[in-house]
Image (cartoon, rainbow, N blue to C red):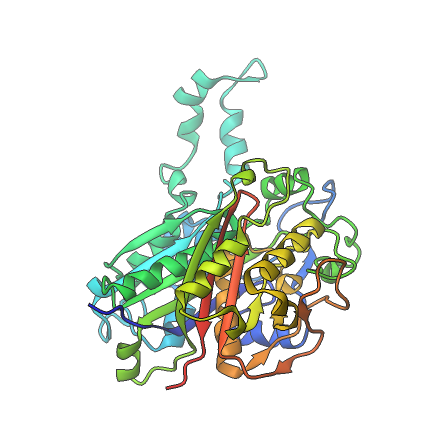
Length: 437
């Protein structure tokens, strides 16, 4: 049986720069940044006190009324995924149980889900209150924690922090009974999740799938971890919007962010039959790994060159066919240099001339959700034949000479490559194709 073609018919993003693809896209076009001083907790004693923070947000606005109580047992990571799923399905025109249970337009058994997640941070206030009841003579007692401390946590506490709960809630809300998975590969998670979900449709295991990733890194533990890894920008606490500068001559670190994105992947013939808007086709998928990533103190691109080369080969095209690079762009100097080298190794000498964009300056680094938002950006760029500017980019840093722009560019793009990587050593890439009817 021939593999089925995969269309992208819905885009849903939740970012510090805007909720919904329309707001996010406009923020990119206007070079606006959603990075600001942290207000979700007291960050006064941290070296980096800025982040890409999503304000005035609750998943209650994106779930059916009879599901709103469940939001109480959702960590922010889960809430972002639930909201992105609602936005993506509505954008696609597919009616699921979560949109209108009486007018569904897809067989639940043929609807899949694959959502990338990260290391979810427990609520420190909840944990702190419970831990105080497990102290004995001022010291933590494991025995007392088992007999008394744990009882001071809600019985459903653990369900707020399991990575697979992003997929669980989305599948329950929308009645997705097809293949379902959760990928936890750091910043490559969202890209890899979309790639795997595309395979569901290729091999006819599902007719449509919701896929992507989400994560919140705006919390004390996540900020501390990234600070200890020396990845954060500490020079822009007084000018937050200018903090993250991917590939720019003044880049000096990344900024934690939160949010994510989900896209609707659909059998192309099905999408055409129902008259859906088709943003792009998913035509190539690649994954790679750098064993040196086991040393988290050393910069790595996770074998990104291998991932991109595999995705290009999987698409059945040559490197010269790529018309857009959507880069990961952490803003960490050594990582930006390694990423630039990876793109040039994968795509050849012409890589420096291909229009490129990175959106980290507008949002901070979205970790498990970052690659998924990048895929949504690539799909919109193909659909509109427009390359957005790279926020906070003025001139390239040494050894970071990719073709980023400070202004939007109208250009003919047939294929776009999206790549992401994590300091843990994993990487993922996809190739999208413009839909031409």
